Length: 166
View 1 (cartoon, rainbow, N blue to C red):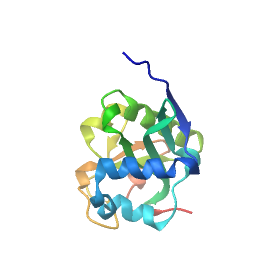
View 2: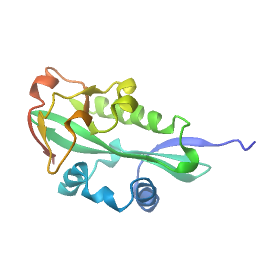
View 3: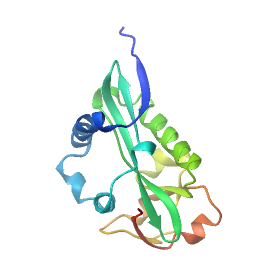
View 4: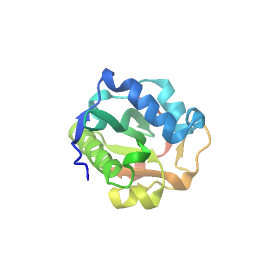
């Protein structure tokens, strides 16, 4: 059995091509049509809060964080989160989420928001946002909008438009 040298690193420009490949492999061409992708088109993600996982030097997973306003909440949009098929079901995605949420917390984010599968993300600390409280720049299933609140009255202030924050 091969021993793996798994490391988690802050994203840098040298990871871009591998991250693009991983996201294409995970989500296909439809990834650009998603509502969260519309937000990411408004401005760049924050590489200081975005991370990769490497196995023996090969980038095999990534998560990105994009600064957003969600109503009056100064937060971050988590995603995309993707892991190469060869490395799925090993806890790598969960660890990337944990690292990214903690980094956002340390940098003063009031919330980490995502559109995702509640059974996967709720055990990682995510809670459902009030139904249809946030307006995305495209269709989204309101039951899949989740948040890790880190500031005061976050749920009460998660009302209105979600958009990129400079």
